[in-house]
Length: 124
Image (cartoon, rainbow, N blue to C red; front, side):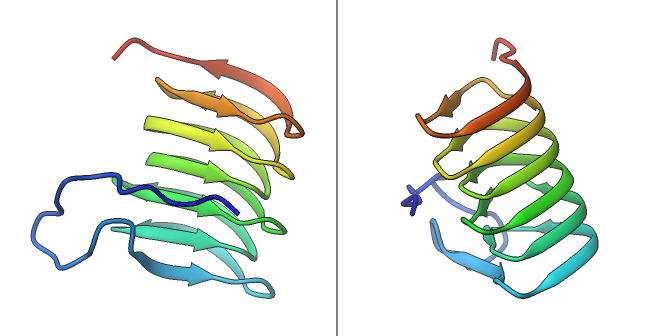
């Protein structure tokens, strides 16, 4: 499983600690709709819709996500279909499977990941 690095120096107007998981949609749970959050959210179940955050999204092994994602950082070990726009980075660890488009200045795809789609790396 991926280890979460501290991502930001500080958070404004809240008490969220660096790298702290603030929500968890675990295995067996399903959600459809729009998700917005601060801090780090881990998805281990099924999600369909839109995800927006200025922080970190972690998609665990076994998760199935069909979504448009906009985040600071995205770490994927599960199955994702859709488009990702990450302001800082996207990291994919096996057994990740991704179908869609990734736009980010930093993309890491580890050996064993299934990647079907396109990647765009805009200049910062």
